[in-house]
Image (cartoon, rainbow, N blue to C red; front, side, top):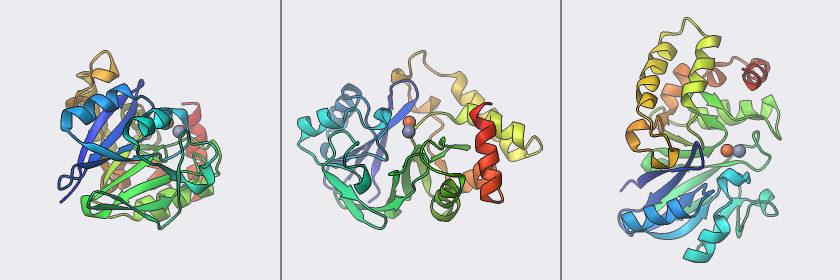
Length: 252
Ligand code: ZN
Ligand code: FE
């Protein structure tokens, strides 16, 4: 049975996710910068947190790990190379490793580029991938510790090769501004224009405080197929073009 996936709005535009195995009630928290909203959601759905997962070490994805680890007595996972810098880290993962959440299993994709130790959690049976700050809806993460070539591999050879219907759960609600950039790059792409109009309607409903966001104002998840149609970084022809786009976006 597929995971129940709860989207928890945190900080000012971050997504934290609670993944619940419907059979066993066991749950994983993905990318938690704040403890309170997670605890409230865990109690609301009656889950039992057994895993704390980080996609990368940035504080807006990991700051609450120690508090959650203490509260739930659950191990904290991240890439092996980030053992020294993911808060609360206990267990290292590498490309191809598997990790279970109740009766659901994730396969680890190693996708360094935004940071050197970035990973994604791919659950084939739930058709869902949690990819942090690497692939965003209509965009990609900044290259803090990697090169355009590394982002090319992450986007085109790993995430982009997942089945088209795979749901993409990324680390931030950046979709609207990403689509404005996408339209600037490809003004004649009707799929981008239609998507921007749809997203503007969704985001016009937003609450003043992101913490109060309800699902009807969230543009995540997206799908791998939709990203192939509208994401300029997945549409780039080669690593050089991807690098040029990323540079342009840095100052857009
Ligand atoms: Zn980050
Ligand atoms: Fe982030």
